[in-house]
Image 1 (tube, helix red, strand yellow):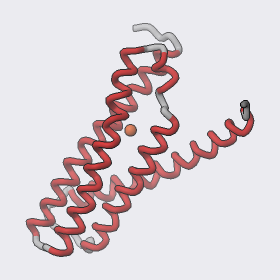
Image 2 (cartoon, helix red, strand yellow; image 1 turned 90 degrees about the horizontal axis):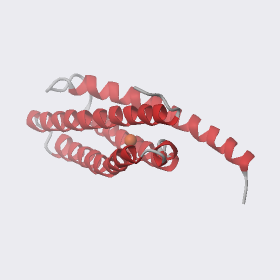
Image 3 (spheres, helix red, strand yellow; image 1 turned 135 degrees about the vertical axis):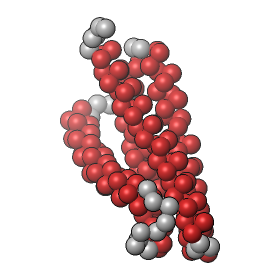
Image 4 (cartoon, protein in one colour; image 1 turned 180 degrees about the vertical axis):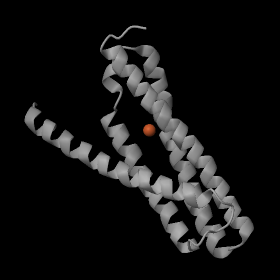
Length: 158
Ligand SMILES: [Fe+2]
C-alpha cells in the first residue's frame, strides 16, 4: 500500500503542529523558570501556578508523543548501532520525565491549595527546578544525538 503524496502532506502538517507546540512549550518553560527562580511567590496567584504546571504536563504529553511517533532519529540510527543504544535510553526517559511532571503538577495542586504555606511553595519551586534541569539535559542530549546521527548519515569524518 503506497500513499506517498498523502504521507508527505501529512508529515508537513505534523511538523507545523510540533513547531507550534514547541513555541508554547518554550515560552511556558521560560515563564516558569522566571517564576520559580525565587523561593517565594512573586505576585503570581497559586491558582495560576497550578494551571501553568498542568499546562506544562499536558504540553509534554503531546511533545513526547509526537517525538516518539516521528522517531526523529530512527532512520540514521539504523546504520549506526552505537547511536541506537543512546536513542533507546533517551526515548525511555520520556516516560520517566512524564511521571515526574505529573507528580510535580499533583504536588503543586496539593501544596499550593490545601497547604498554602511558604514551605509548600518552596517545595514546588524546588521540584520544578529539579524537573527543569532533567528535562533540559534530556533535550540537549536528544539534540546532540540528532546532530550526531545526521553527521553519521552524511558520512562526515572527524
Ligand atoms: Fe525527547
